Image (cartoon, rainbow, N blue to C red; front, top):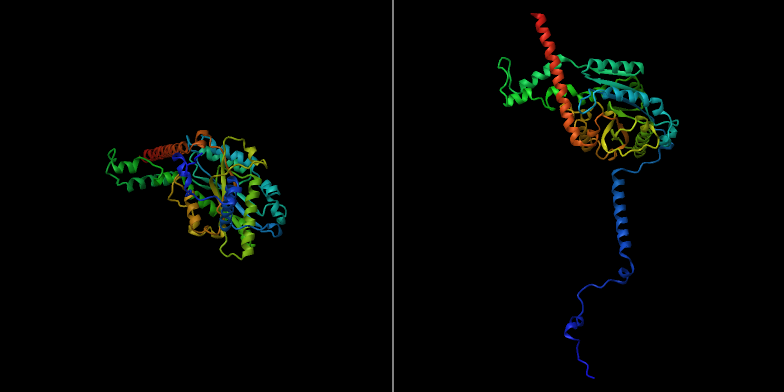
Length: 408
């Protein structure tokens, strides 16, 4: 039979060589999953190298005791309903006094095992815990707080709420808005009315009422003036200052971890002959979701502490203005985070770890919805500050009226 010299027309394309690259024998034998796994492994090694460049590996500090002292000063401020429950300040204070003991914090624990050369306890020992009462507006609450601190033999300092200073701050807002004595009340809706009488969280008297950063700077000064800090500095021992919020809670095993990290880092700095040592540490915060306080001291409790951290400052840098909290920032206006960002871009850059060490607990505020939602927190916080301003102004005006009636 006769065979055609070429393939049928419907199969003609198979006569020509394909213009695609053929896979090599190696590609044909290696599964695609294995190639992807190798690529991911190389990527992981690359990321690890970058991390090690940023946060150098630390030697085991067990061979040499670092040894340092820490002074913890908490700032106790006004509860701001509806952001906080009305009695939350006193409730959180009772929880800390009941479950946080310096003896337990400074005794040996599993997370401080690496610092056994320091006598079995943490390398950085909390030598003093004190409290700073930050312009407590409620006189009865102030007396109850002071009574609690006296019963537990605690050290405390106070920034008093002065109605005279409050009125001075109030009229400084009005004067800045263009109001002058004798000119009458500003017309509603004008810029001067908004500046003088529509109280906002960025006004001078709002900052006076909350005074968050002013209290933190005062807490640092009080810690540096503590006798234990002065004695440690005179002996050539490093001193660390913890100007923390009043609703923070420190568990023994958590401080053991923080202490071990600081000790290992300082030991590595000494081994490298580092002159510019790390001056600030960040301790990640866990926002309580209603757990009982006793749960936080369980050794197995290691939460995800990714909220805004508390800071641990080196005492020998505390006098540097770059390490001061900005008192021009009001409560909620990134008051603490602003300093953290400035330090990360300045003194901490290339000298300190990029991570926050776990952990410190932020005790409940009494408003569960605000703990779960940032929007609810911001809204209720602004309302709470506004209501505090109203109460303080009403009391100040009542006192002025009484003083005027007495004089006439």
